[in-house]
Image (cartoon, rainbow, N blue to C red; front, side):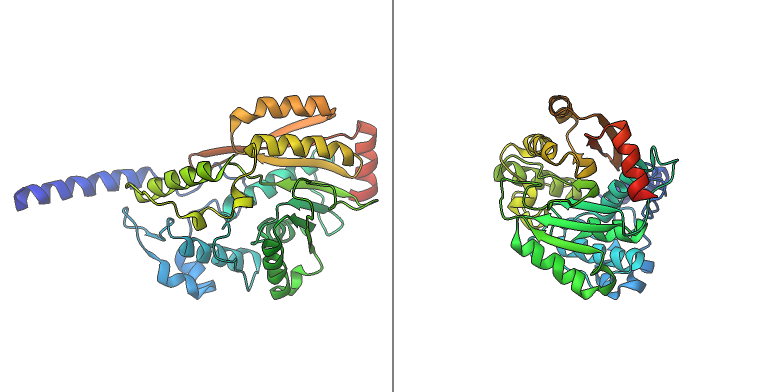
Length: 337
């Protein structure tokens, strides 16, 4: 190709990129209205709060400041910057190879479930540390408790079957003293159990949250990781980088998301009086039919589906309760004032 041809091709590319850039919205309108991450990242502002982010900032193909989202270390540092700037977390880290959850998506779950608590409560979200939340699979990053406590002052119990994840979460709590009295982490001793061994006799929770393992096997998880990396890099990738996606207990389990949530539903019936709202993130819409059937079989008195979205990714939270209307009213009066 002649220099003139290359130049013409480059000019066409620049015009195409500028047109695409103009169409890109500045606000992520699909995120919850109270989500502080609806605007595009102001990376310079974040780097001012967390200087370790600065070396990872570079122009993307739109000539905007960005980071390499296919680089696990860059994503982890961005998370740390978000948590410091928006949530007052001075020290946050996770062990190598552990899941680095996207803060904006996790925040959306918290805000949507807060709206659910407000229903039947005269539209008012109950706040303060008397509102207790159980996070099933708290993970090494302890992110849901951080977000929920900052946004609404809730107290949390975080459970996990992985002792390394629990140790990491406790390290984050110790490094951020304002969280120590608000969050407790408990190791689940039985990998086949979800609530048993965690919820103690007489203990009450206003809600439970969960981001269940999605994949059915390591092979399926690696395939999903490859697709994610290819989409980010816009090129062929042959080797999965599992530390971009997380550990085995975070990524896959026997039967995947569908079986995990159905097991959760069956076990939640044993703790029907211990919790107002049980809930779980559901990534695959095709799983909903069997989940609704399981809830009907278990005798849930009310089931609510909360749509969520981030970019091209659509998901939802399914929440259920076994309390009657009379029990719900008594619960709200006794615990939410």
